[in-house]
Amino acid sequence: MKENNQHSDVAQVSALLRQARTSPSLPPRFQQNVWRRIEDAEAPAKSASWLDALAALILRPRFAITTAAVLLLAGVSAGTLEGRQLARHDAQINYLTAVAPHAVR
Image (cartoon, rainbow, N blue to C red; front, side):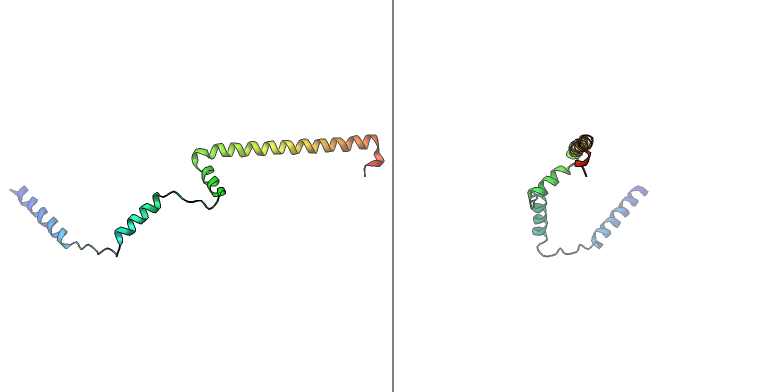
């Protein structure tokens, strides 16, 4: 008997709580604004330039390691090329100094 009494009390309290809730009125054109936001979010982003599109592609996690490896390889290649040119120039200066010391100032 107590179970039925408690169940009816809970049902009465639930009904009172449902009646006591006030639902605020929605702002004008709320549903239209919601659908517009959804459409805007689903629309592909328009990049201002090809550089922005490239940056967006590179910054994706899938391509981040590949991008870092390519940039590292490019840096090592540029450094090696610059080092070769510098070593060649130094060798030319050393040769000229040995052959004609007065020609090099």
